[in-house]
Length: 146
Image (cartoon, rainbow, N blue to C red; front, side, top):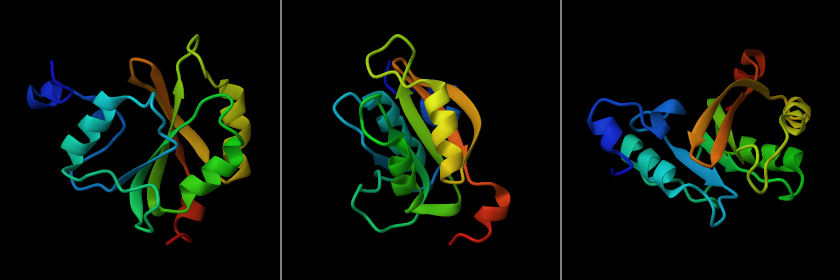
C-alpha cells in the first residue's frame, strides 16, 4: 500500500493525524536518516507542497522536529523550531517510541517545553517507530508573534 492510499480511500493518513491540511507550509528539522519516509511523503501529498528547506527564512504553519535521546539540548532545539513558526503554528516533536533506540522520556519533554513557552496539547502515534507530541504557544503569546 502506498503512503497516501489511506487518504485516497477516505482514511486518515499520518499527515491528517498531525492536523496537516492542503496548502500548509511544513518544515522538518533534525530529520536524520531514520526519519519516517512514508510520513514525509504523506505530508507532501497532503499539503501539495514540498517541505520547506531547513535553512529557509519562510514562515511555516507546522514544524516537524525529529528528536532522539542524545541529540543535544532539547530546549535549544525547541527555540530553533519556534523561529520559523507562524503565530498560530504548531510544533510536532517526533521522538522514537518507547523501547526504540533514542527514546526520549516524556518527563524530558514536559520539562523542556514550558521553558520556551510551549504547552503539550496532545500526542499521537505519528509513524510505526515514532511518537508525536503537539506543542503550541499559549494563545496570549500567539497573538504577539508574527
